[in-house]
Image 1 (cartoon, one colour):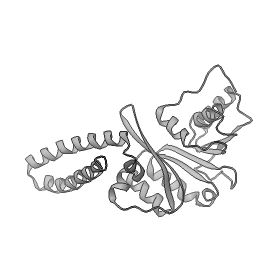
Image 2 (tube, one colour):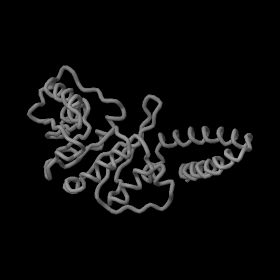
Image 3 (spheres, one colour):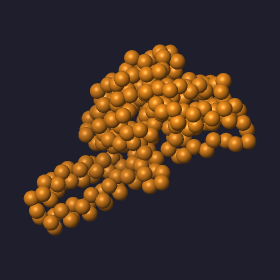
Image 4 (spheres, helix red, strand yellow):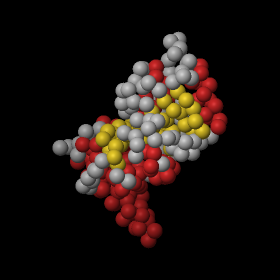
Length: 237
């Protein structure tokens, strides 16, 4: 591998990569430029990987980067819709990062058979996070590690999951992450305070408006606001 130029990952992708277990072979679904497996190879964390993407363009970019770093013997590229081109036993872990929650749910559902043969999944959904946590729960996955980073003004939660039972006791654990609340994660605290302030402003405007439409939205907002306050109490304990 090239020594002159090291891959510099964004904070988001570096945190995703930190979940990968040393010595495991991974499949990176939606690999884009192939940076995660190249980075992991450079760190000596993985012995090899499969970089997968549904589109030929990103796959060609990934292939070019892999060749540039002299890793063609260790990282293979594969055109694949989700994990459809992944065979049982080819990977110990699967990384799916930077996609919307619903698309990730589709990939996991359609790839159920092959994903049952891997030890863990590393997931970084970009939308509908609470719904995605519910999906994982219903699909028999338990979150064993969870992180959240702030990058370029955006908050990114991410998780490592395994096939195991998990118990949720409160709605806020789906909304904000049981592990993040348990560890009193500082970035989640930032997010909660920002959300509380934003929703507080909207709440004040709706109260002043006093229209039938605003009353309905206000009722929803009050519930959202109370859940933020409930989550913030975890930081006081």
